[in-house]
Amino acid sequence: MSDWPEVSDRLDGKVALITGAARGIGRAHALEFAREGATLILLDICKDQPECAYSMANRGELEQTARNCRNLGSQVITGAADVRDQAQVDRLVAVGLSHFGKLDILVNNAGLLCPGGSLAHEIEDAQWQLLLDVNLSGAWRCAKAVLPSMMAQRSGSIINIASTGGLVGFERFASYVASKHGMIGLTKSLALDYARYNIRANAVCPSTVAANEEFGGRGTQAVALAIGVSLNDYEQSSRTYHPLGRLISAEDVAMASLWLASDESAQLTGTAIPVDGGFTAR
Image (cartoon, rainbow, N blue to C red):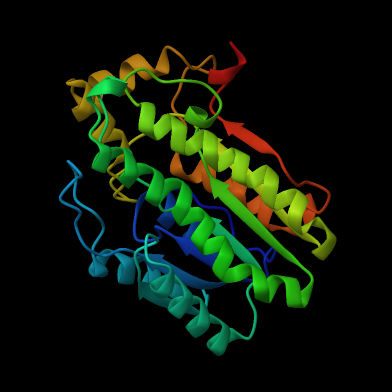
């Protein structure tokens, strides 16, 4: 188990919606936010997608995340929803507002890394649309669902989990890179559009996240599979691109988002923060 810090209260009284919360980076966010006193609305698709080389999270994994958060003292509701479907997202947000009366934080974490490993001209139209519809349009749909209530209360923090692929290019991942660059553009536009309502929007840009069975993420394994190498070889080679000499963890990403969700970052909006061990400093 990870050596988590003692329970604190940096998000005490705040309600957070986290997408892609069943495992991986999403689970790390849920646990860290719970430790800091947040009430949680946890969303995941909870069914496999035939276009993906790795399995999606299931309902059991989502409920396990919820149980772990409840054990930390958090109030939690969960829902299976596909961020490609506005009606499904709207329903879960409505349930959350009915239960908790407000929504202070949105973490747009739901996303796909596959299909990948292809030259741009080899990507099928359906594959291209899938990545943009989940990674970029999905974030917009979730923001669209929560913004009216945030506007009414004149406060909120939207945190988009982008990628270093939103800051630089990656070979053979054109659709993923395009979706994450778009996500950063969306972040900046949201920041400008809603600043008058005291709603902030920022992006977090992780580089390669070390595989960790505790959180059950599949993204790093999916990249290794797409480029035809073992997970160990991919992680070893990725470390060489990080000046700090190690991969980041799911907890590293969650801690950056925690700061953006808290009042400690009250003057920060429209930014894209790399969590990358120095990868983009080269």
